[in-house]
Image 1: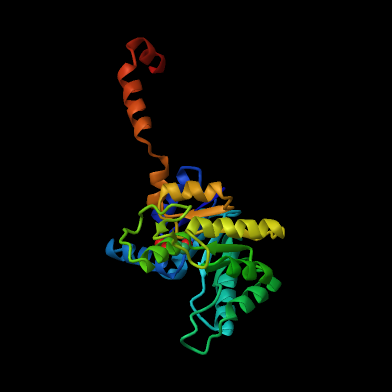
Image 2 (image 1 turned 60 degrees about the horizontal axis):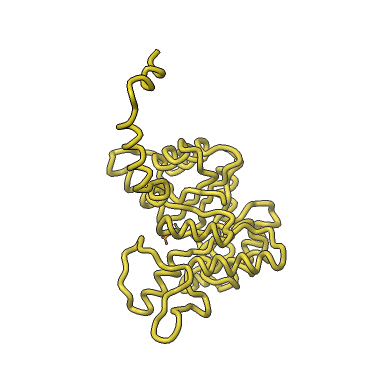
Length: 275
Ligand code: G3P
């Protein structure tokens, strides 16, 4: 499974890349806002264009960086996708355009299928597309048929949705079982999907049945155990927040073991390392 980092914060990106485990980056308007506020608080000033150029240059060739449109009509999204791609892809040939599977239709005359139309048009233009806000397997199927290079099922938000509907309290990073949660006589479900991981597993089955090449990029990841379960069900990629990446490496017994090795190091062995 490839690992992307789900952040627009360059400091986090640089740190995670130094660990040698990151294959790409995903951003969205909320993550850009978070990064902009973070650097504003530190008194750093830059234009968005300079910032994105620095990010793309650092990440480099062969490691995709998703940048999202903000419009909601076919025309607006298509135009913005070209602006982003034309402005930035020449930096390191690593720009992927994020398009919502369907846009918010309550403003500006947008229609439910505008996302699919844009995916198809960008695919025809040779621009790589990551289809975002996938909340059910059928949206993934439609996105793949329209020509998506990646689909991003939002695993954590599905878990939140199931818990919220059942009025179960939770903290954002709480674990939610892949196999679902019993509620009364049955499992909590959203049209048969019992968890975010189950959503990814269902998309995996569908894509494998029909040999779609579209990559499953599991997103909205909440904790390390969920990453493990996403890997178990065959997500091609998980895009992971910096805090969750850090959580993945730690184990109590490893720390304990290292303390013991340190305590047991005899002088005879230590002298090997003296220059
Ligand atoms: O990649 C999508 C992701 O950033 C959404 O995560 O935490 O807002 O559900 P979240």
